Length: 500
Ligand code: NAD
Image (tube, rainbow, N blue to C red; front, side):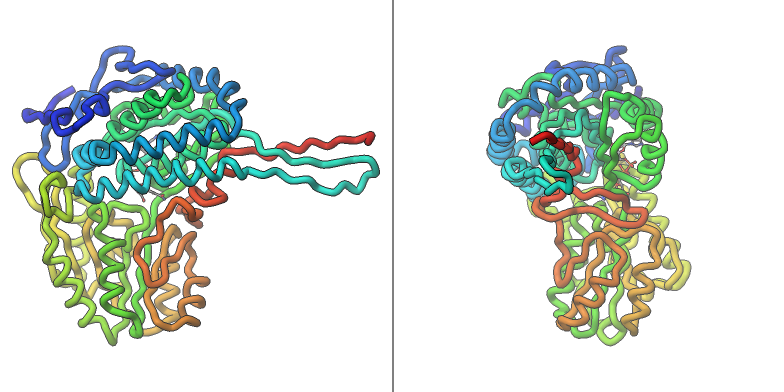
């Protein structure tokens, strides 16, 4: 496979260069692809080659599943307190190595270093939350209608779990699944995303350092395409895997559901979003601008809970657009490792093309560019797009229907509460929604009517380890985080005792 002409020495940027691993991790061993094939991993901010990564075939995914199955009984037999102790150690190591873990994440994903370190803190919080929650996976006793009979329900680990994660949160999407799975007593095979495998492998280094037994955590790596699809097939069709937890796009979710039917996998899916962000005429406009920026421009707009359609009441539309444009125009775009940069690149050129298509489509239908609007061509394979604000965006255009996944804020005008709720709910997906108002009754009324799994009222930031994160409609099912997150990795077992 081809490699880029420039290369980057990531190890030299780290104080602990052993966190930078370029092999997969199966059964406690660091391994290359069994046939030696590699693929190039490049930095989206510079186009430079970071490393040649193993392009693992399906047989190695099966090996990882075997290792996880073998390790399962001993891990499941530990007390919840023993597993909790491992998670607390991981939490502490993540905090200790936040600078290095953030640097690895920044270099492979592109998000600015400060934001990358913020993701490490968020990722670590799942270790802390689940270390505590694992101790409280209470069962039940249920009164029986039969004399001399007692019913007990106990919680048991579901078994080997396949964790398939995306590149936009290379650390936190892994820990959000891995922490509750390990706390519950499950073992895991992580299929790392091709764009950001290094953050997953750095977590495996930490697991190795604290003595997590071989086979409990495995990480397989391969490029996009045939071997990625083969890995998905193996995880879905292998009877030794009991559950798939997937975060990614809706089309891949549909495929995994179909494939998983052959072995009746338990599934939880966190899929795509198309969040409506509604700003009523009584909103605190400064707060709303801060909220839009936090929701829309974090990770250069590549988050599933991103404000995708921003609805602004006509009475405050011009004033809001001006305030937002001033802030967005002041963003500093560049390599996330450069001091002061607030917006990094998109993860790849396909991402840039999609934003460009959405801008051109909206403009051809009457929208106007207030800020940005163009891709930035540095001639080096980097993937930048100017942070963009569009006004007078028509009701019908691509950005109203599809998730942009880039730094594009389209402002739609509305006048009527019922109409804006109908427009917000017109999407086939339903992950997150936001509304800004000072009216308490309206905030409750609208929040209840939005067809989504999560609503932010007067805030653009909802993600925390302690909340049930997830969607409705075509955004998937199951919840991650919060008290319900660990249930996804457990089964209820009934024990009925008679003859007492
Ligand atoms: P994607 O679905 O293409 O890829 C996600 C993961 O699935 C990657 O690891 C990829 O390698 C893997 N994958 C792809 N095809 C596969 C197959 N046939 N079998 C097995 N695995 C396969 O999505 P993406 O483009 O990488 O990520 C962006 C999408 O993820 C967006 O739609 C976004 O909304 C969604 N997302 C959702 C959440 C959430 O919590 N709901 C969080 C982050 C991202």
